[in-house]
Length: 207
Image (cartoon, rainbow, N blue to C red; front, side):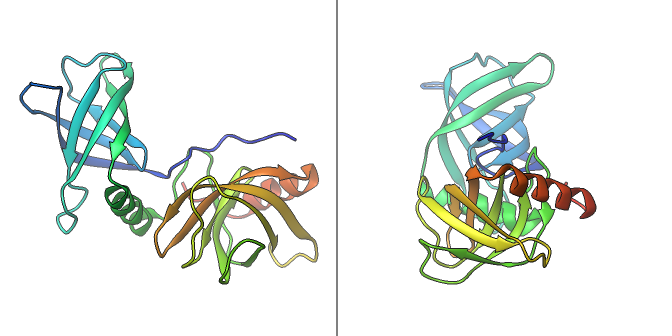
């Protein structure tokens, strides 16, 4: 079945000072304009090349401890900056970043998601789960008992109080401790995906 593209982690437009360094070099300053659980987009950078490994440190907000990570330069955009992906980051730091992003915006993705508040039956979950939003590619489920990244689950839910129940096999792409988890639909009937897409047309999406 077709699989819609969604980014693994939610991302947020920001303007954060970031310090970065390669081995044996002094820290240089840059500005992050995009932050996600998987990396940053840095502007005002110098001497970066694709695949170069760097150290980064930044503080998303004053109340959050300094986040430090190793990252790889994934791509360069001439005159704009560099996209870097975390290669080694403490899980507690990733959780702080993800939790802050959710507090600020909910869940922003390249594929816009429409708000959907409904109970979600998850065969593998031990507690009740509720949806926050949805797109044809996936959804965010609020639960205090998140499953590990990579887990395969079966979910069932009503879409906009319709009699029809949507059933899908999905994979957990990331989890935010005591908040919930983002899932990517792996197996879903075409008419169910079409119904979700139509729901998104009539409900204002989250940008």
